[in-house]
Image 1 (cartoon, rainbow, N blue to C red):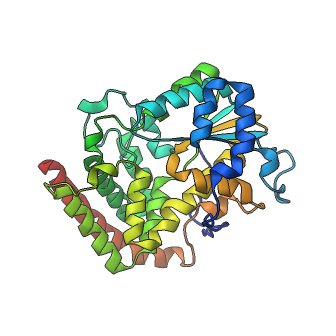
Image 2: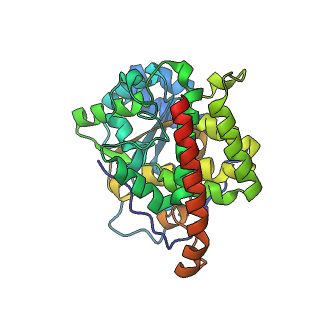
Length: 355
């Protein structure tokens, strides 16, 4: 299994592409290429193509080859993208059908290193702890290593926010009666069967949450934390609460209340996923790559693949602001992160005990 490069704490982040314009529709932009290739490959893929769940982007649609690209690097000949629901048995079947039909060299999943444990969680996880199988939870066998990584990459505040989102996401998805991430476990199993390399294609969640926190004012941060606690401790469900079961839908809801979150939570991750699919070292010289991502990311990822003019670079997609010196950054952040982190951790423990 291939993980992305280790993010540099010295790099600044400049989003290289704007979000898709309102007129862009990934289905119409890719339908002709997808329909012809899928028909030649397997009739069983036709339904996924026509519904927009499966698209194909050939290398000729990627845009010009960037001048800075190493001469020994070759982008994949074609990228297939399957849009899934993280709480759907049908998506699990779709993953198996597509991977066995396409038989790619690489399978890129919408996970990062600290969430890779989702692929190894038991499918019958209904009796597991509340945060065992969740997009925000600290997965894997080395829990304290995951905590340390979260603090190193995102800080204590981002870790505390992640824990709150994990509990909140678990609560609003409790009506689904299905374990989270079955399609990722299916991707791992089939990748092993067909000898495809599994690639962790999402930006580290620690950096995403750190970016999200930095985009908010102190007043917005306070309101967000209060709103999450109210949602966690509420004994009644909002009319549409059970509908918001996916991380993407949760991000959209947060972004509607806090518009500045839209860029770090959705648009930047769309660009990172596109980079992983066509420009990461893991897919170098590949013939075929299949991406397994949440269906809400389809439009942004396909747009980034097609509109990129060489702007998608790792150091522009992952990094932490470094305008301050190391000493001043430590002085400003230590007290803040410690106070906020410890306070939220204590409240999280109280909430866990009450659930």
